[in-house]
Image 1 (cartoon, rainbow, N blue to C red):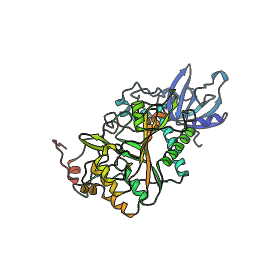
Image 2: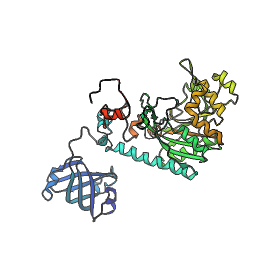
Image 3: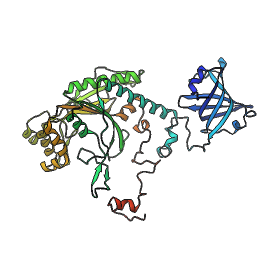
Length: 459
């Protein structure tokens, strides 16, 4: 007999079914035992007689079982409207225990918010069983598919870019990976696919996107993790307004498709200059909601190209952003007066995306890096691959990237992006389930990588 999913049993009254899942709760009423069986579609009530099925009296929460039985319609006064299968129950004729479970370290039938984060993260595989996390991860899948459908329909090409790359100064601290075959050399995990997507434009792809894993060795916050997912997109022969119009349509379509119950405050997203946002809202990611349940999108535009930082200058966004100034000498002499073709997308006070028109003129790029404190030789050493590519016919291009988890966090009304990720790190960047990062590295491994540690290594 093939498997029947719990919610499919609603249409099989009078039929024998074969169900699989976890025991969610057990209740005894006199000589009859009731338990809720949980699979990924939801709960269904099972009725068992311990005198007929001796094993029924031994069942415990979170055991994995197979149930064979007949579907019966519940009397009207016994219908449970809180669950999808509340109009039926299954009279068990056979129960097979497939796997037993110890008592979990925390309850799984609540939202889990009262449980210590460290305990939840250590047993994340159990935490995922709770309904809230299940819903978040399934919504995450639907949102990703909705974005993908929109972009593919617009003739974008999904391209995966490398994870092992080169360390380049892009803003955050890199995670480094030592090379065994090239002693003393290191890969870096990408902070973003920025340079690769620009090289794809040189390659003639013209419309690119991917759900990219990004890695940044920086302090963790509620809306930030050491590794996260970014919906990344880039286009050739396009201007800022065309990009913003496309993004606006994309987010409206995704919200209406996956979250039809949520109301968008204005379907023509307001465009606010950086200067106005700071003056009026004292923030470059203002919350424009009138009511709490609204979705208030807005574009912040016309950012400054540079910001003062520890006696020097750094990019407000990243160095590949095109300045609103073509004069190389003016860029070098008056960096504080240079604006950029940069734009952000904000939602309910959260920055969920950012992008820019890119510099495709090597001289402009070199001038920007000079302002940032790099010599021409340093720029060539770090970005020679990009500058060389630009010698072979680079189209004007621009794009945008969106913090996938940040968007989900707002849409699912969570307080932390960890709640919309399957296996996140803790607030201090640790994976307590896998016990990473770990010192459990052998001397042999370190020797192969030509690495010596600045501590007493007892392994």
